Amino acid sequence: MRLTLLVACLWLAASSLQGKIVFYSKRDGNAEIYTMDSNGSNKTRLTFNETSDSFPAWSPNGRQIMFESTRDGNWEIYVMDADGSNPRNLTRHPENDSFPDWSPDGSQIAFNSFRDGAINLYTMAADGSNVKQLTHMRIEHWELASKPRWSPDGKWILFEGSIDQGRQIYAIRPDGTGRWRVSEPVPRASMFLGDWSPDGKQVLYKGTIDANVRNSFAIIATLDPIGRSKVKKWEEVPLPKMPVRTVSFGVDGKSIFFSGMKDLHWNIFRFRLDTHELIQLTDHIWEDTHVHEWDPRLSVPPQQGLLPKHWGEIKSAPIRSGFKATLLRHRGSATRFQGD
Image 1 (cartoon, rainbow, N blue to C red):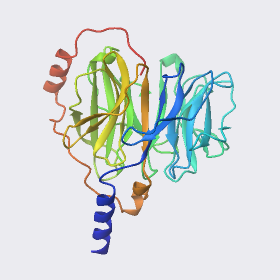
Image 2 (image 1 turned 60 degrees about the vertical axis):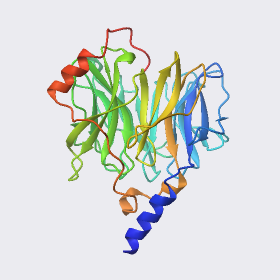
Image 3 (image 1 turned 90 degrees about the vertical axis):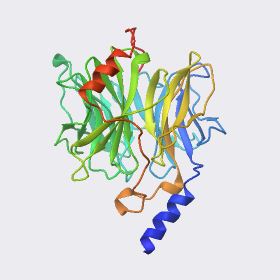
């Protein structure tokens, strides 16, 4: 009873989230890191460089932000304090290192690198030491593994992979074993990773047909509760009709963020999964994208069992072969692929 009351209190306290969002934007001429409140207010620029700073991620305790940057000549991984101070270089390699993500306990970082002659997944300690290679893709086979995302319990790492069925979403254990495919292949579609739901029961990703960002769709895969190593169902998220780039879950698990093109400009939106309410958080003529939200009231580790078990519903039918055919008929003509 006490545990039930505690869960209920946590859920009620967090029902109106006032957390922090980190994202990157080109509104000041090149890609820089910004933060804002969860309602879109108090936008603050954190990085000031002539080169690109992008793909930020909060540390689990919210005290640091990790990101990738070209400030030293090629893509390297950096970390800074949450206010933008004290930036430190974690990787120093002649090949590109990018797309970093923290383990849920903050002790490790997953990232992808070209240092082995192809794009592969690696892990390292939070201080940049003890680098380990997880995948062994071969460039001569047009293989790659990129954009890793740790599961909330630390048992799996999601990634985008071009292996045997085009660009799909896969999961792998942190030791490099047990790889399996999460996404459902759709003809002529490439899949791009969003992230895990806060409770680790679902995976959000985006599909793009014929390399045309205007023909994009978002999918939530619900995992089997036993082992979380297969998918029970795939459901399309009923997002508004607009080009979509990056997608991610909100920390409440009942909403998702996406970067969408409206009036020819890329801005950040929150979409509620239960009510289908659309909330525009940024309104700028340049590109705002790649949201990662953090809130201290929902920072209890999921493995301790203190997070709510119900995270909203998706009002959509599971993907079937007929759905795929309908999806393909309504995505329009192909144009040049744009920046996922």
